[in-house]
Amino acid sequence: MTSQITPCLWFDNQAEEAAVFYTSIFENSKIESTNRYGKEGFEIHGQKEGTVMTTTFKINGQTFTALNGGPLFKFNESISFQVFCKNQEEIDYYWDRLTAGGEEGQCGWLKDKFGISWQIIPDMLPKLLSDPAKAGKVTNAFMQMKKLEISKLQDS
Image (cartoon, rainbow, N blue to C red):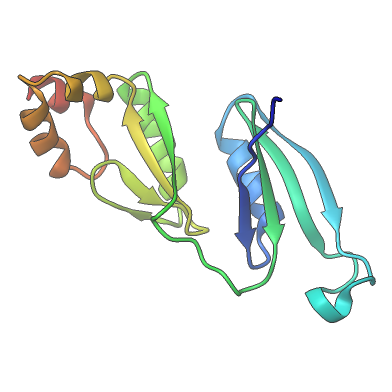
């Protein structure tokens, strides 16, 4: 059996805006569909007829669903999306775009303007951390950074 695992992101009312935002940042991405609330079920969902219910989009082949479910739940750092970058230019690109309207965190973490947490990290970081001779120095270096800098990690 092959099953697709699709993250469903619960927004108050910004699902479509978020999908447009993310697909504008990542190459090989697109909005696939948008579904709207009907009059049926109003007594449960409380949404105006015609309001966006879900937007399905893909980023690099990974499907996501964005749901307008109301203000009941909020995002937190217990879930984050890792973006592995091949060079500093990519790190800078994703960092700058995803922090716009959001906030920088430590160690390559950030929150975007919707409150979703991301880790923008060089793809060589796991290799550096697996080298017992370098792991401690590399960890010490990235713990002091917000946006990760490849040259400083390699020099540690």
